[in-house]
Image (cartoon, rainbow, N blue to C red; front, side, top):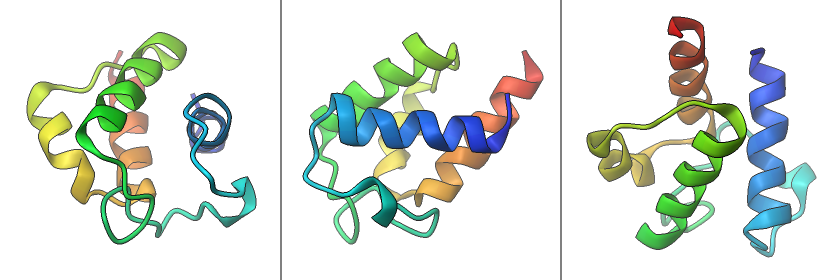
Length: 87
């Protein structure tokens, strides 16, 4: 799975399925997932993780779910790409 593929899938999850009021073209890898960026709350993080597992087949650990609010989109992409390559 390429980084571009993962990026496009995550952007679609955020803008299409989770209905966050953000334009897809404004979602950059430097954008924080938590308060300083997308402002995902704990429920939205769990929803995103469930969509990632369902659509990309990559499971995030419980400890990663606790940390993900502090990640940037790029850091999430790095984590997902490493995990997908390990499978």
